[in-house]
Amino acid sequence: MGNISNAGRRVDNLFKLAAEVEKENAAVLKKKRKLGKMQDELLAAMNSNNIETLGGKLGKVSIRTTEFIEVKDWERLRTFVKKTGFIDLFQARINTSNYKEILETEKFKKIPGLEKAVKRSLHRTKNRK
Image (cartoon, rainbow, N blue to C red; front, side, top):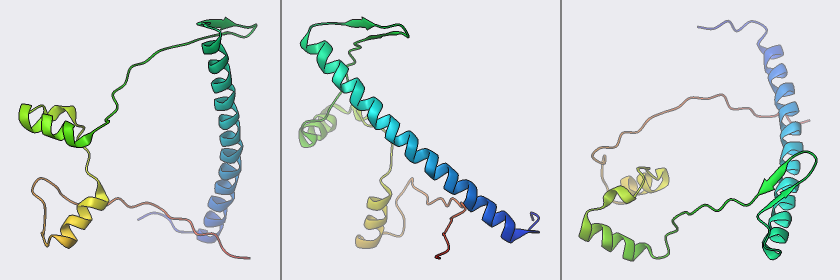
């Protein structure tokens, strides 16, 4: 067991630091939005002028093209996977909400291969003034 002495002071210090973090995170988020907007505007200008690289005193920017896969028709994809067996096209991730719903609505006690895990963490609730 951990030491619980000075609990009230420790809780208050936790809240003070959390408030500082929230304030700083808000400022960072605002700057990230501004940065994203600046990048989008610069990319659009470069695209419209057919420019791949630009430089300034502090550095340079260049356009990087990355390919990615986007599902346009899930039903056709599922049919393809069933026919070919290419199940490895999908990532292994369980949707917690759907898991709970299946257990509740379908009257299953458990789903083979799945096990519920519990994570404990500290939750903060601010006192009202």
